[in-house]
Length: 239
Image 1 (cartoon, helix red, strand yellow):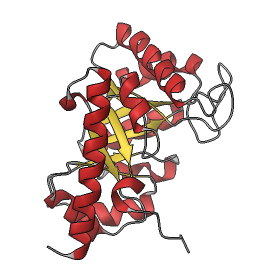
Image 2: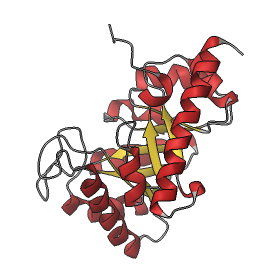
Image 3: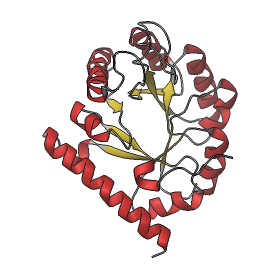
Image 4: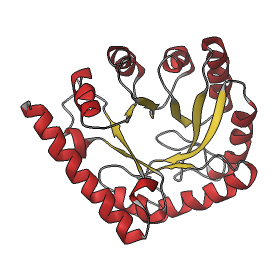
């Protein structure tokens, strides 16, 4: 086993222990929570090692990094999630490899994703990114639609050819009433998910929690946690 594989295996084991302990504390089954490893800034070689170690879900937030990495790992049994803010001029590329786009936050993006999914003959899962630091109908600092905009966007996705409405995603906000209150933020997202499922029963995915706050997300009921640093280490500087 290479040094890097040993390191990643140890980190994965620690994260696995944290998720398992959080599930036990919350009275949940371990299989209710899916780990997504965020591989941004790390090479395709690390993705390949993670696959060997049993990881099946990986995430990226920049198309210019993700597209070549996904191509280099096309032979692996991976599900790719796009989690960054997405410009419409990158949609064609992203639809080429992403199984799920977690950062859908405006109607223009839904239209672009639908067009490219149909053109590519693919079905792309979509999560509405919820900004809990936005006003009732505004937008968040790091993307996302305010809670008041979820219903309209979800309906658009649900009706769009080539797209599948999978659920909701959020990032714990740095400002506003939920700043520093991750558990409360994630519980609010769960309430919004319950509301969404009344109209869209299949939209059961709730993506919340990262390396620092995955326990709070699991406690609140998240189905997916997005962990980067705790698995891969501190990010190298970007140029």
